[in-house]
Image (cartoon, rainbow, N blue to C red; front, side, top):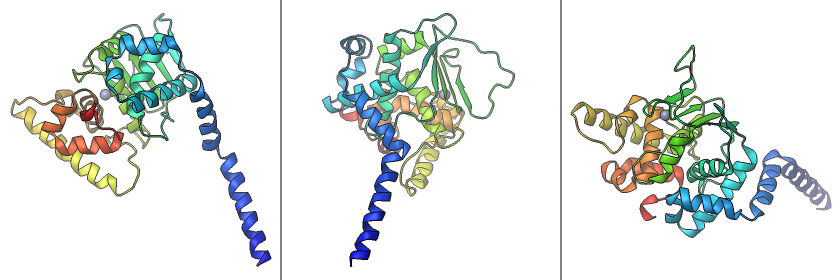
Length: 275
Ligand SMILES: [Zn+2]
């Protein structure tokens, strides 16, 4: 019995040290220290003035969102482009809207994201291979935003402000581009983000394909859709546009596509209908 006990103790020690040294443990320890800091009053003021969606969140999700903002600002560089000097207001407003996608997803933090580039307004990028694998760019607002599979989000500050100012118009470039980043965590964007348990993917694929086909049919017949025509351009754009509708037009989306709404609620682990 004593020898079995020694093996057991050794196994526990190995397991404990592996647990302690594993990078995720260090990361979560570092994050918990960041989240223990007070949330600066100036940042709270940005949320109050610039992001009406924040006030509508339940108190526990407001707290979660602020902690996510602290982590994103500590971990991700924000880089100004075309002469823009990035301010705390910009960083907080972008991170806070991105954090909507991370509520209740505790493993989050956009692990693939390396940097956020911010232009003062709509931007144009010359590129030899437009539409290269892994790139999804959004020209409906004359390049309001872009997401690169390699870990970059590019945003127009004018469009970030406009997206935050009206939280119920279904247009939010930050939600859109960061949804592409979630989609990129599983490979080149294809409309299938990480969902957790393996058995969930088959239902996700069936529901999203059904909703995508329904959107194509509606557009072909000249009908309106809460998802908009841009969502019909590819499965990746469908997921990003559906994410905008989920957070900004939940009642309309749930009425038009109840199964899609349920899948998105499972993916994002929140229910904006109740906010
Ligand atoms: Zn897009």
